[in-house]
Image 1 (tube, rainbow, N blue to C red):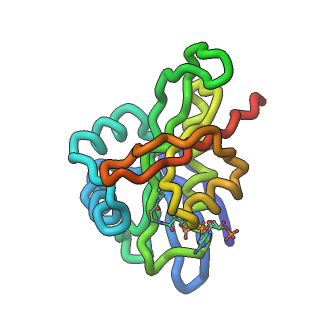
Image 2: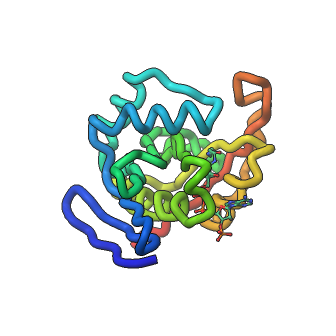
Image 3: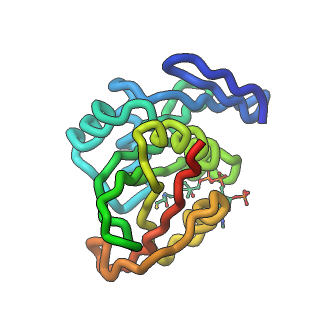
Length: 177
Ligand SMILES: CC(C)(COP(=O)(O)OP(=O)(O)OC[C@H]1O[C@@H](n2cnc3c(N)ncnc32)[C@H](O)[C@@H]1OP(=O)(O)O)[C@@H](O)C(=O)NCCC(=O)NCCS
């Protein structure tokens, strides 16, 4: 991994000299590319207005990864939700990972890890207590990624997905600095 330059709106991450990948904030013009990656890589599709509302409300943690031609090859998006804590049912602000995907050709190069790390720093600014996500119980790759970031499985959400598959509900407490 190479340099990591932070600016007000963008940051860049150079993975390999000959095939640099840029990670930066998503802009409106990227949404078509984000939707293309989502539709190719995940069974869960969302309408355009859903992406747009996430971009409008949580722009700092909506990131895209682009190849050297500027094509979107990965993305991550989060939102903040008030959800009862599993411990005491008290309402808490949670950073909910809505979706992450990387195009097949670009996988296993640390792109998802980088998207996750950078976006978690950003969504944390919304006074959240915890990061939360759902993942298909069969999605070993994604589960491996989340475990690497120290997410723990709390419960299984039965038939969470439209096709009837169960989800692991995974969480990670935010470290207060
Ligand atoms: C899950 C996904 C985003 C990972 O993207 P990626 O850029 O390849 O991930 P990284 O290269 O950053 O790898 C991160 C970690 O994921 C895990 N991982 C990645 N590929 C894996 C594989 N084939 N098998 C098992 N674990 C794997 C490993 O823990 C890896 O860490 P390591 O390289 O230090 O061992 C990608 O596979 C994807 O887009 N899948 C389809 C969409 C999806 O399932 N999204 C998640 C929905 S909840």
